[in-house]
Image (cartoon, rainbow, N blue to C red; front, side, top):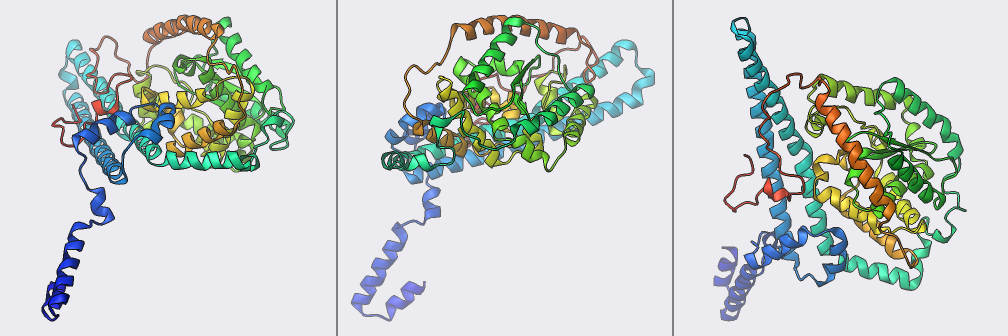
Length: 494
């Protein structure tokens, strides 16, 4: 209106200029308007396909993907809206199930005196299954869905930013500037002293292990000698090519949790679930190298300046109490789903103390260096991280995602380090020894699963109940099976 009014007081040329200005203002959208441009199917489909590719493929293909800024912005909006919608639906699902559970418990209380044994068991089974369904819905809303979409958005950011980042890395390599990065002296691994005083951490690590065992928080060790000796041998090989200055103590635990963790002073714990999840030797070597880096960087010591060993154990005991009493904390709900109401596993790791982004990125950088120096393909760590974030890991791999840095930052940081490392021939991805370990591990897992079935459960005491309805997707399915994008005509909840 103001432009039109101004135009009426001008001459003909002024009116023509005003009209032209009006046209310009109409046809040049703002940045916000550009980001709201819908994605046509011929763009949306290949972009969705790209987001389901592994990180290591996207690193290679990003420069050839022809998506513009408006299309990237539109896809980011789709992901954010879908995540918000899907999370909300599963939060409502959780609330509905909890309401049903309270109603069933109230009904049991009022009718208890009149129920015969068969009716009582039926009500117990209904309550037990409602607990299971509520646990599943809560894990999806609080953990699985956010992790899956954080991963999707990280890959979208990689498509958008990696080509320019790649050019910067190449420029640093060409100028030799990459040698000046922190811990860039990779040819001196084993002769450098990253953080002096590793030997002073041994006592703290020993005390932590002792208290964990006294508190009953340590799962039993795997007894299979083939599995134990392989994991120990591999960890020792990586350690010999690291900056470790203390004896390495490796323990393999018979627990479903997909996790490995390090305590100060050279104590490394590897859980059965991790051995089941890794697909080749370079992936396992990458994880072990990452945990060794927490020791060589003395991250546990730095954290224990703020929290004593006793406080760590206290936190773990609190978690155990939540699990064993059926508490409503999200970690308890995670175990209710993950373990099918059997077993405890072990959640203790440095991130219980709030590992900083700095520590995690340091461990990623040093871990890549150690795996490479030991002769393993350092891309194994990136590939395993991608497997965990893209497939079953965003439900099962809780320990990997509780407090870690943003996925994009972590993947690019690791890839940069790999590109900065000197070329080396014959890097190992797999071995016959790894295959033999996997064969023996199947026996261990089968025995553990059978024992779980026969073991009484504190959270699911009623045996012989029909299995609860499954509301979670099958392992390995893309998140879209739970969270269809807006406009596809499907509902996220079932």
